[in-house]
Length: 454
Image 1 (tube, rainbow, N blue to C red):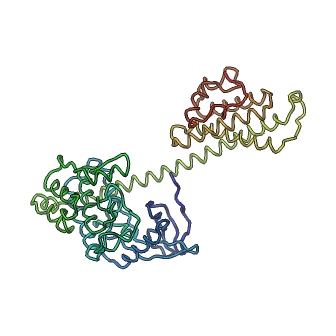
Image 2 (image 1 turned 90 degrees about the vertical axis):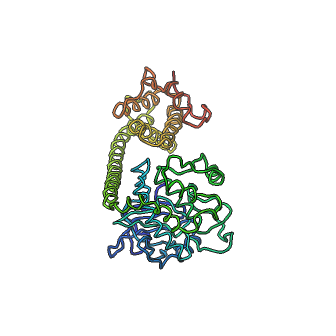
Image 3 (image 1 turned 90 degrees about the horizontal axis):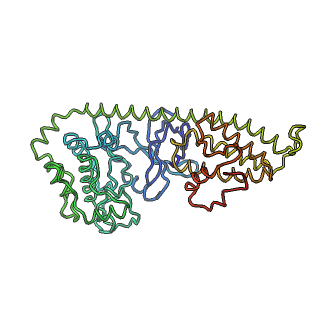
């Protein structure tokens, strides 16, 4: 996973200190930060499509509504990079709530969220602004309020059918069919709200696909399956997801009124207690804190592992230096201290090889596949080259290398016997056959040196 640009303690913008990363989107990275005076904020560095993002931000700068995440200011750092300073919402997102309830959050909570989201969305539309990227990760719940965030991606409503803004943005599972043709008006927000309504009730979006193009095609041609959704929600979803914008609800208010026109929905929401969501929010927060704590412990464990491997490699390195610089007929006598630059480079390769194997043996199952792939590549390439070149026809380097690898394996996690031959002085064909599929199909001769193998 790509690392965030800033870490705890960094000051990317004068007067603000990063506490942790909060998220990443198509336009940049968001951080939880604290000002010098102690104010908690969300700090967003705009990294892509700068002019589009800042143009949207300027339209929303002075909007004030309890159902919108407040945008405070836009400032530039000493390198000329723009940062958007926003209200920090500590509550859970709708996405986190849906993760807690994979089969949907129920009709009562769904109706509550629909009504509260509609309050913020209607306000935006009344101000002549559309959101254009409405999705669960942009909806937050905090202290009894549902808030809409990331509306810097907004665009002023125009009477023109086609937008002068050529870049299509938004999340494909929530995009109305007409967006592909460059049509942007408030009906695309109503369409996205229909997708949200479907997802809150079922736990999944109405259209899936193996590629963005396939999902978009289903938005344009397929009908949502509402057979397992009760009324009035099924009827409302079908109307909100009409392919023709003219057939949809013309305002968010109409959509909400159609849902709350049913007496049992009104009665249900009237009995809804926001404390229930607060309890869920606290449970989600505990999970987040536990995850962050686990990451810190894992990081500390990796640091300890690195220290242990460092000490081990230091011992191995000392042995190898002593022996590769000693003629075969003088190994039991005085050591000749003549290490050439080439030998030092090969020694470095050998150390990388030993460290790669050690980490791989201990954490192989837990680390991502790509990292494991590079470890195997490091083992095969640097190991075979080091053995071939350092050994220089003398099997002593081979024996030393294999013995030390086996020592590392025994101290960390048992290395399969079939990977080292019975004499302990070579890598077997079984190891090669195991590792070769992980190398991406490169020729076997690229990896193998002239060293003993079974």
